[in-house]
Length: 296
Image (cartoon, rainbow, N blue to C red; front, side, top):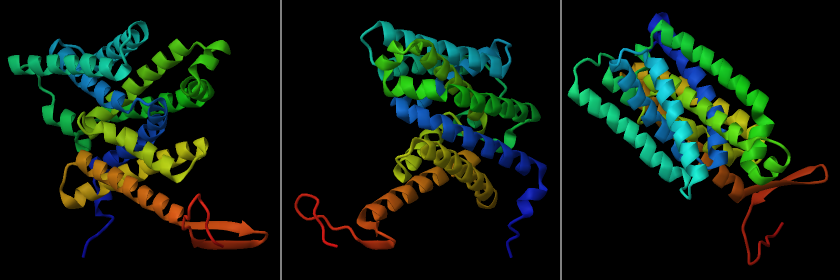
């Protein structure tokens, strides 16, 4: 008989659960703003830049996290400047700049044997390899990132929804967008070792688009996205123990499952319609006839 509580007797698993929950929550939060801004590709791109930067800096004798942050911030700044000052869309700038840094990192690895950190764990994630230092950094980044979105929420939404009006209102949209890019890069770096460069974009975007299918209210979308991210990462980490699978891909499968359930819910809600007649709640199959007419 399976003992469902047996994984919690291991210290590495408890640490992995804590990391998974923290990253699921903060990725779910930042993902809402990424989707709102229409920059779903930026998470994928910056994760590649962080990977390349981490390798380059690590081989050069610099701390893994410091190097990843510096190169990711540099990539964010260059992308921002290219898209603002030239007639180039952000996705094109992201594709070139971040891939170039990623390729440079891979090139350095192929030319030297000095790189000691687990190469595969960065690409595909291994939450069980998280050290105490990683845990403390992830906790700190989660707190600071959450504080940023709490303090800058109105300015971010105003900037992303109506950039021109935000400028007229006195909001320095250039710095708001740049600061958001830096925070996103920091979250990506914190998540890189546990979820993996190649899988991280799904964990950032997945909960957000799932939540969007569940509600039209922005606050509810944020809360739902955070909850979906936490639940998906928790169960992904939990079942990876019993399946003896990599935690990163398993987490992505649960994020995908959450999206599938959200699509199913949204479809059923559209088909099976409920409304009120006074104090009476009435439900029926919502069948469209001609120009959105249906019988009650």
